[in-house]
Length: 208
Image 1: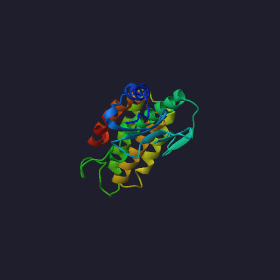
Image 2: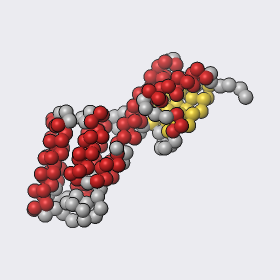
Image 3: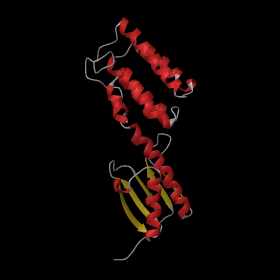
Image 4: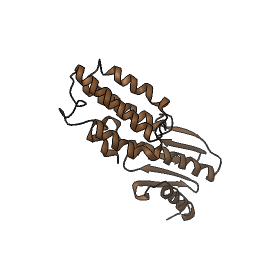
């Protein structure tokens, strides 16, 4: 069978995967030329990286909330650098998981649950205390308060007009935003997820 890409080139790709903490068995690799290939993340097929014969790189997911991106590259080393950028973005999205499940709990368990009911006056006070505890946790882990304090205050006022279920979704969405914008340092994500989970719901532990 004709060899499309030399083993040395293929090994460089595998080493990049290892350097970023991935296993090559989780990827589907297809060489399309001596310096060109397609790489799919098996556990989530829409996630892919490619260097094309037309001198383009293409990948998904992309940075800054974009689903995908593409552009020109000039040589093999530059192409591998683009792959490394993609792997870092991929890793962040895998670690985040499904943010809508972060704070979900069994119905009736605590004040933040799947109920469509609004918060009572007493529950609003309890919610405010929980959000203050979340803010304290973030500060303890080195999160700059100017990046999160406004979000926390908005969550407090939202407790007066939205359901318990919607509040859980809003908290999950804010956590996602803090992670993707690096307001939460990547190294601190597991510890913060664990501690917030103890406050608002066990579902948050699934990210660890």
